[in-house]
Length: 75
Image 1 (cartoon, rainbow, N blue to C red):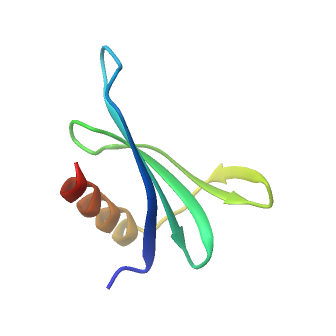
Image 2 (image 1 turned 60 degrees about the horizontal axis):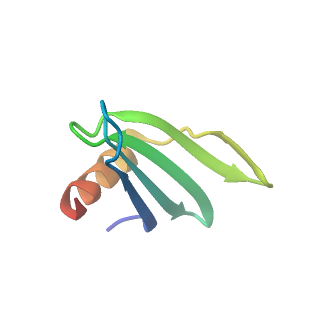
């Protein structure tokens, strides 16, 4: 069972060199965003949004792998 809910996914495929997938999700009532390289789903960055600011997110490997699997299914 997932402990998060994906709320939005953006696939940026108009770049000449790299394509990216940004996934926004909610976990424990907190908003997060992870950007992956589309080719191999390597993490580019992860952010947590709190109190009107964005900070680097510290997510568990389990959550990241679960989101990665969900992204694979959707693209």
